[in-house]
Length: 263
Image (cartoon, rainbow, N blue to C red):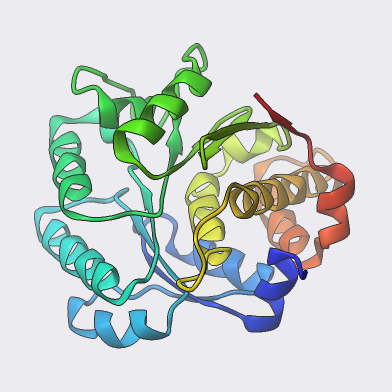
């Protein structure tokens, strides 16, 4: 059986990214480097045509506005109609009541395949009283418990990202421990991961824990290579080397270097 990464590079899946203004260029370049085909399509009028051929849709609410609310819901409903899986990234949901209200509406009206966020964001989806500073995550939070509770509350796969990552799917919980601290110094690194997860999905196949583990681990192992190759020059060099590492990473790197544990 071919790995998800090798299948991705063979098929160059179309991934529709409704993402925030800060990260569009970086997200598109990251997906191209990995082997996917990004389309930063935001027009509901073309959603049916685009999503018919797409493997997945990323919805990232980083630069949410009233007009974008309407477009996001229309596009996501079209994806549900066609059967295109959705990765939902509720960026900074705990930072404002406005974001909380929209996410509550979105998750009530839309079926999503994966919810991806840091521990603070996922907690804020479940608990209206949670607040957070911008997009930062509270490292003191119990990510495993939050991920498990979110999995049962929303009945969908959960990927909590942070210093360590947590994946919950099929009633199993995994802790992933690859990655570079420099990821936190580059705007859009987490948003790109949401798109990478989407690139590993397929409308003809149920989302599995293994798909999510491979996607997240491939990205994080690439970040480790990027840190080594940037020779401690800092975030600017790291960002360029991350694109290079995504281009060069192999499935064998995943097999040899992935640090995963079922908990």
